[in-house]
Image (tube, rainbow, N blue to C red):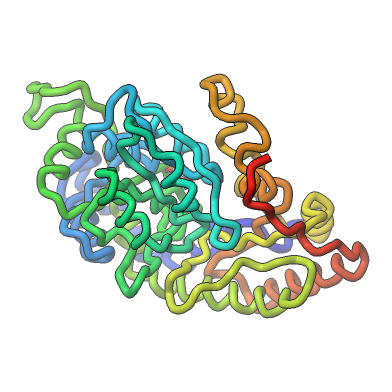
Length: 383
Ligand SMILES: Cc1ncc(COP(=O)(O)O)c(C=O)c1O
């Protein structure tokens, strides 16, 4: 029997039921399903939340990155630096915009794109870079900004996992550049279906994004470019407007749970994630490293605790990118080592004290019965 699901969307709905039902019924009554006031309201609320001038709602987080890349003018032959450790969509969206993702290994502590390796991967075709605020931890953007200025690169931030994370006191997404969000149901801010958004403070980019999401059309039946059909529908916008005011509190609860779990694992062979100061991490995922990862996963499953692996196959080693000529095994040693060791434990605001205590005691039991070795020290030199 499942004692701790990996995510528990029913528990969150239970805490919002009355408000949520009213908001959804209101959309059904007004029958304004695509575009309209409910979407515009959410776009304004989310822009204000992240501290950007504009938010453009789109159909999902993948489209958010594709449309951002198109709006930034990326085209065939352009190279875009992306981390090898991310969800497939980070690279896929760049490919679908016509450009070529170039994979870069990640930092062994933050698991973020390694800025020094990124610098070494720049060629005269490199036009953009995609830092991913992975697992909910805000990327330290200053070195990326410096690199982008030096080489005239566009920065497209993938913030699919880090709604509300702060970097130097600023909410991720407030940079004024192109920041892309996913509202997939399990995200820290999740819709009841697919959804996504781009935030920016550049009015020229906003104009292009609005046209691109609407079949390249600024006015009905006038199509200036070949665009997309990628809109955030009113039902999802209504759901997100109900949830947004709770996001800070949910993120704070995730942080509390993460600190508790990290303290319980201190000094053990199961390495908890590094916890940065303040509100830089919103713990979309709580990812530990274990030399016997598969055994740990199986053990926890037997105890009714669901876990995940984010991500089991490094992006450059996926069949899709191998077929497109990505470098082979041994080229990204940090990502490749992590892929065999990382395990995401359940993490969401609604985890109860009892569930956390059960999770901790189950992991401790595993350590005592299996005595895993310390997770392998990661070498950052390519084989
Ligand atoms: C890092 C990252 N980028 C992009 C995406 C794509 O978002 P969506 O599933 O909404 O298309 C996701 C979603 O899982 C993600 O985790």
